[in-house]
Length: 288
Image 1 (cartoon, one colour):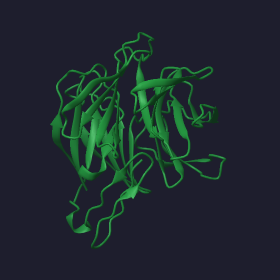
Image 2: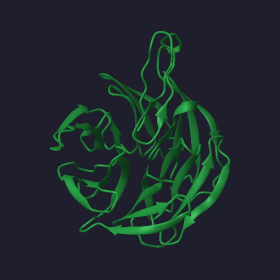
Image 3: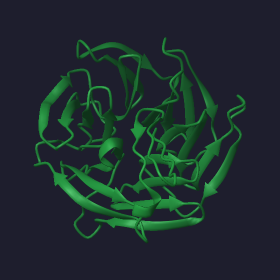
């Protein structure tokens, strides 16, 4: 949902699928990409699975309630964080949420996957205004938008769907094993699945091309430009993909700290990491 273009003298900010990305002077680019811990919350969350930055409001949404990620136990909730890591509203929306995961913002609505449904939350009133049941869904996961419509993944079914803002949906791909993380950039949909990072054509046929085979089973995806990506893998790894080079820039497996569906605060270059079973959210400054 974010783009980054480097120029020789100036930095410009461009609109991505759900956010913006701050550019940096190429002279400041370090020899290797790196993440440095900026802040970490306490453990007040419960199964923190996904984070999403809202550049208009300057806040971070966090989906929670995933300790039993496939059960309809009504313990899910959406939190709001400030960009310095302080909690603005721990349970901004709760009730009729079970295991909310991926999120996307479009036209004042927060769309959230919830096992076999998509919940549509009116941001102004902080209320679920519509629930869209997805026929034959097994395990809905990530969500993204291109600014016109929504896309969401069903990891266990290996499917990707598109959905209009009125809730009408259709399967656009059924051949993506363990598909999870989705993002949009320049009219193209991108997906992380069991085979790697895929790019889909924007001609309506959604023909897919594998552009990276090193990050398999990926969870969260940030797009900096059409050849530069940050991708997480749930069990504790974050990767920086630039062209044909893939680098591990964070490994928290030893601490048993998960790296689930990451978000990105563009104007601060912060990668926002929900730690799932650690019940925290951490922010790392990205330099590259």
